[in-house]
Length: 428
Image 1 (cartoon, one colour):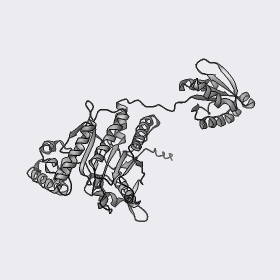
Image 2 (tube, one colour; image 1 turned 120 degrees about the vertical axis):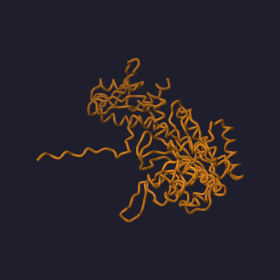
Image 3 (cartoon, one colour; image 1 turned 90 degrees about the vertical axis):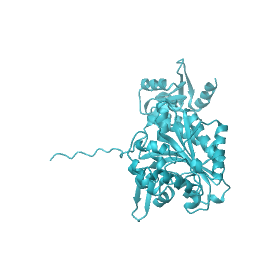
Image 4 (cartoon, helix red, strand yellow; image 1 turned 135 degrees about the vertical axis):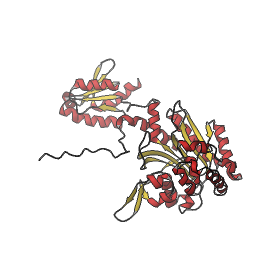
């Protein structure tokens, strides 16, 4: 009987490995974002990947595509209904309420990054396990914070070498002024419901604002002529939006007033925005987006708390960094290469490696290799200034050979003096 072939495992559909050759881009983006967020006064928070499913149903919105079509639900052995987080904001709101942050001096400024999960058809720049970097601010209704969130995004993109970005911005108003806009939008679409796609026919009944989020080609001419929310804003919302735009003008941040921008989540009020790449022949794929959500904390059981935030799609940004050939560090800036020979050389070499590390001298090594020729070739490839050679004799004598890689000159020094000697040479 033929032996059954073993199963070849692959990553699940829509998920992938982040490989070492790509980590230079990921590291540059995440490290820059983390440093910049702290410069802007944000503190890091990390929430669970699994949350109560109802948190997203109530927070993100039961009729949104994220909840109704894309969410991964998990039923535990104990009967709890959990979900893999599809986005970051509801979890951070839950953490804000649960951990008593409302009683701290406001505003509370938080940032996070990590994996999110959405069950959708994989395509370029869209994965079922995606990564986001997010900012959330709680406890202040000022338009200056809306502008500062956008300023952060603009600053981050420039800091990682992406300068051709454009901000699409709109206002969704508030519960006081939105009903009149909803009525105007329904009146407009009722006369055209036979000309729209099946999804839009459903949206007319379930969530009219989502009509403006349709991407179907046949709906675009109709959407383009739809009433604009900015024409229906109440005095307070109009004033707030005007202030946001004035701040952006003062900062000289380019933006485009997009009356059909609505975002795909239910909790937004007032300011909303999306970030696009403005390069030649660039597809209209959002690299991130956000806005104000002044009612979400209350809707999830807290007291009324104004809030504003943004989520950035790290996968798409990294893809763009690669396409634009953004310069990255290819690895640590090694100063020396530790060459070891024989069993005694290896033992002493490991100890010396730790000593160098503690002294802040980055050392490369190849402990698995025995050939001095192969190790010296690697030292040359790394471009180090000095090679430290530790053979059997040096191990017995407690010495190290310091070889200048440029001149080839070698000098033997005691092992307990090698750190001081290297520091002198680096100063020269």
